[in-house]
Image (cartoon, rainbow, N blue to C red; front, side):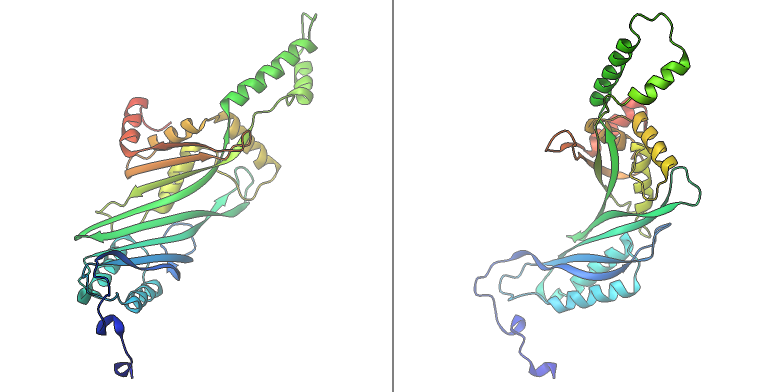
Amino acid sequence: MNAELPDISLSETASARLPLGWVGMQGIDLPLQVSEPDCPANLHARVDMQVDLPRPEAKGIHMSRLYRLLDAFGADTAVSPGALKGLLHRMLDSHADCGSGNARLRIEFNLLIRRPALVTDGLAGWKSYPVQIDASLIKGRFSCRTEVCVVYSSTCPCSAALSRQVVAEAFREACAGRKEVSPDEIAAWLNIHATAATPHSQRSEARVSVSQDPEREDRLGLVALIDQIEAAVQTPVQTGVKRADEQAFAVLNGRNLMFVEDAARRIACALDGFHAPKVHVRHIESLHPHDAVAWAEPDAAGSLAEGLGGAP
């Protein structure tokens, strides 16, 4: 039956003869398998896939061939650098009649990780981490980068200093003319007046991408990367909390005051062992209607780790 149906991609030539850099599809829904500790194995992904079309006379590529390859990939293959490399090769093999020599993929999904509460035993919840994987096979060279997004809390050091000054001045006024104040009196005063001014903090995010180690084709190491980022900032957002956990979170924020520059440096210095890291940090300001941002490039991360003695 198919032999009787017209296929103008084969029977006709392009009206304007021009090679095309990339042709394919975007936003393909796909059930996908991952192999990461403490994560559900199956998830929903969206995939972009393209090949080049170097022959100027070719009317078009074969979209259905790409789709069927991706559908088979999602059904029985866990995502890994080696598996993606194999898929890219199959994409090119399927378009040998188009002369295609380059192929690329972008996969986006949310990775769910079970996280325990800071203090309360038995309390935990799921956190969602956006992930983007970019893989390509260009002129025979395979490349794969993964990006994760980690959300955390940041408390402004300047705002904290200004708040402490207000509290200190209020205490001096309250104790003016007194030569002695007992610890109990100080504690009672602080219990009421210590929040005369409070520093501002905000939800913040770090987007970190790394190149996959060509020697480790069997796994992506997403959880390891996320754990390293959260250990660097010390204040990842929480899921299930009780009052004791909320207090512990407040303590972590107080011990980890940071500008956006501090956060970018902390993360960059903590990524030893990862290939070519790139860091983009955004503090979604509660003081301003705009955001504070910082970037750290791979070379900068290396020099920072050397200059500061490694991760904080």
